[in-house]
Length: 471
Image (cartoon, rainbow, N blue to C red; front, side):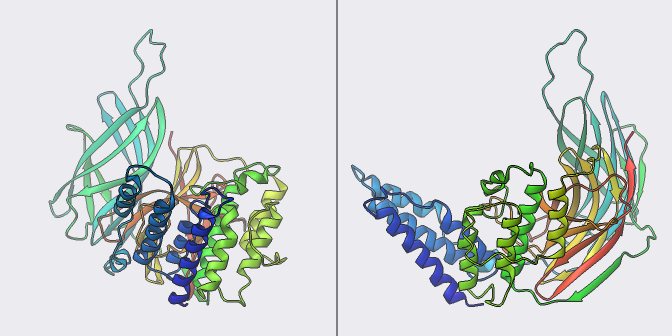
């Protein structure tokens, strides 16, 4: 990878945007966001640092402000405002990794009942995680709000419900566990329960009380469960190829949720739904190739063009001819898409207990912390360390890239993942994500393979699933 060429390419793109904006026949028009999207791709693969990319964007914004007509000194004021919006960040801080300490990852599979006044709930504890930066449970279940008053015809608003439980561990240390959610009537909920204060020792069990006067529920955190079957295979993948796989996963995940006869909806997807708008894929590929992150011999750009062709998507801007051969996981999802025989989505409210810490990939640590079925499909809880989340990225990609996760179910069908609701743990590059599995798993799927790929290796973990349906 050539960082100097990557930065040069980014500056040339900024100059092209400036020329486009100042040309007489364009009337100040630019491809808004193109520079930022390409910069994000180059940051994700490690070709440029955050500070350099921000500086180039700031210089373009200031140059555009200086060339736009204004009156009464408005241009200097705008330049000063832009300078504050685009501070140069220290790239060394952006790539700070989590301390490589051991984690405690435990499947739980116990239900705690909430009986507090008129509030009722049943929460299934999926898994427990403890790292040097805190402890938390992943959970899924149901919450029930008070019944409407008699003769009330108005729909009740969504009620914010904050729950704070108390707990004591095997060494007598006390904790509070809290979460917040919004419910209307009876609703499925999911998320995390954080322990406060942070545990200072490994916990064998917790006695949890959900309300004063209620009996304590003992949660065992040292079950003797068989180790998952994990396979590590040495591979050689460039950073650009891994990013292309991310883009393909997002395209396929979105296509799985849309009617087959409307490919234009995928092509028009906003950055919040895809890593990059379809029309910018050609710019991203060109930048990756210029930086040496995508070798000339790589088939990835042709495969991405081939994927767009199979989905009927045009206007992507990739000049490489579409490849006929695609990766197996892409073909599997395409086969289901073109057949349009989706399996019935499981009803929300059930969950599967499973937990496993995966071997580190390119400095990133991963732990699976259970699954649940929600209104938006099947959700996999994943905790990661050794990454940095950038809060100004619309799709919550990591500056230090999170390996792409693919799911292969017990019937041999492949599923893509995309992330929702990141929940940081402390301030040390650790975060719990809810990954939406697309298309959703079939109800009662007995096991899945979780596949994560890095530059030097691929990890495959076979995880048995014990499903529970909340009554």
